[in-house]
Image (cartoon, rainbow, N blue to C red; front, side, top):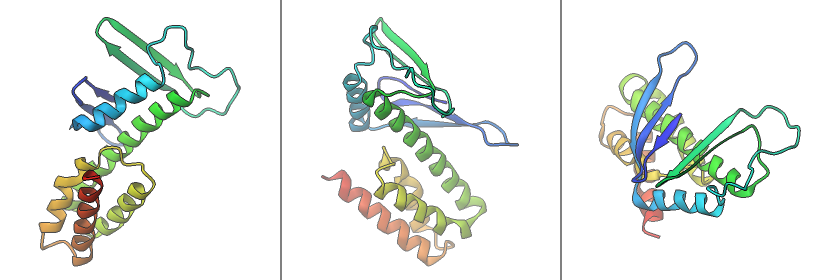
Length: 174
């Protein structure tokens, strides 16, 4: 579950099988919040006459609930599948943000308990970045810097972390 306020502050909760629920605080930068608000606007999400639930019979893709409040106006929609392009983009944004936050949490854990697993995680992060599945790359800055500066981490991982940091800074300056 992911909850954000209008400033981009919020929490992300997830639970894997046979484990405790994890709660991660997050704060998105203003540009990312603006991009999210643009997606809500593009989807015309607050339009009460707009139905996002697809009438088609499709496989169970997992129930998604999106709630948006702006002032006194609010709307909550739950659906298995939607044909609305704007709503699909919203769902993709949130799914990517959830995946990103889970990855970042796991990278922090790997720094403590599984240093040999860091190179694989960095490779997966690079693939996600190239596929545009990372919506707030600045959220990785701190953990990548920790990896880069930690001399007990294998050199390959340190070099990859530095390379990813450089790519993120380059894309942020565009």
